[in-house]
Amino acid sequence: MTRALALFSGGLDSILAARVIAAQGIEVLAVKFVTPFFGYEILVDIDGYTREIREKYAIEVVVEDISDGYLELLRDPRHGFGRHFNPCVDCKIFMLKRAREMMEELGASFLITGEVLGQRPMSQRLDTLHVISRDSGSRSLLLRPLSARLLPETAPELQGLVDRTRLLDFSGRGRSRQIALAGEFGIHDFPSPAGGCILADPILSRRIKRLYADEFVLSSKDITVTDIRLLLVGRQFILPGGGWLILGRIEGENDRLLELAGEDDAVLQMEERPGPAALLRRAARCYAEAETRAADLDLAAALVARYSRKLNGLPQTGEVVVALSGRRWTIAAEPLADELFAGWML
Ligand code: SF4
Image 1 (cartoon, protein in one colour):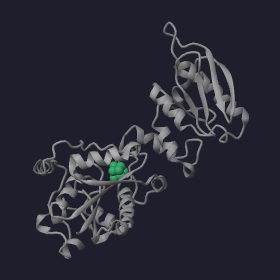
Image 2 (cartoon, protein in one colour):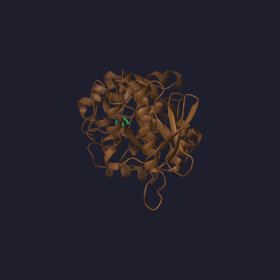
Image 3 (cartoon, rainbow, N blue to C red):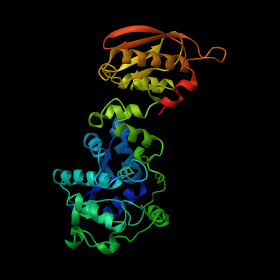
Image 4 (cartoon, rainbow, N blue to C red):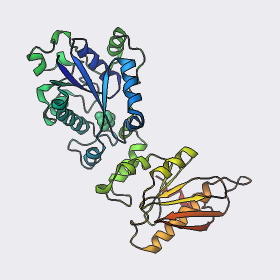
């Protein structure tokens, strides 16, 4: 049986593209790529995710973590960024290249995506679709079932593996034809088109952009998955000495910080009353001067005091425990006045 490998974002278009091809009796295997910017939570329960997609949409999906190469891609995407920090064209090229590599091992004859001509201003124009096919090396192996009849014939059509007359001619931003087609497949529960890609989120993408602009203690060459995951937690500060401080806002965020803390990170907590956990990233090695690190740790402790539980409506002085490089000590911290740190927040 002919097998196709589908790029699967989880959005309606990718669901429909897979189902349109499956309706021709072709076996479709979908691949869901994840990075800390999209889909990373799936890694916690991959089996649960694949089961959900099978039950809801009758699609078999495999999950692939492409974080490492993706972090590098963000340093200098050849085709630039969209409105925020979203390198959509390079993102698709990157995923298709990876899918192209997977084709042989999975026994797939061609690739499909849910791209719709003219749906997005940057990444789905006719010329851009062509660039994506060309630069990913997939060329005529890439079939876009939802717009195929508006595009040149692809290899699987020319070889008779796919019946072009049963492909579609969707274009533009409207969703009504997709929703009608979903109804024909009996699909009524699908995600909204808003996405879920943090790189296209106006607020969170700004943080990531600053990280990549070397505004943090680490060079963009050294960014890790953990850095990105930390960047999406809690309150974020760049301290006067250059330190990157993260404060949990709720218990779940405190737990997340403690779980993500690495050997080089300083962890600060007030044990005498409830309050935030704080993490000073790479505190053990990012400071050239011990005095600068000590000053940033004092400020971090003062911020922990500021955000710890208030008494009579006011933040209180308290003992903040610092753990760094196997050592523990306490700092008697005065809560920092809001006007002093407003400019340090990300
Ligand atoms: S929105 Fe995010 S996941 Fe989608 S193509 Fe753009 S960068 Fe990639």
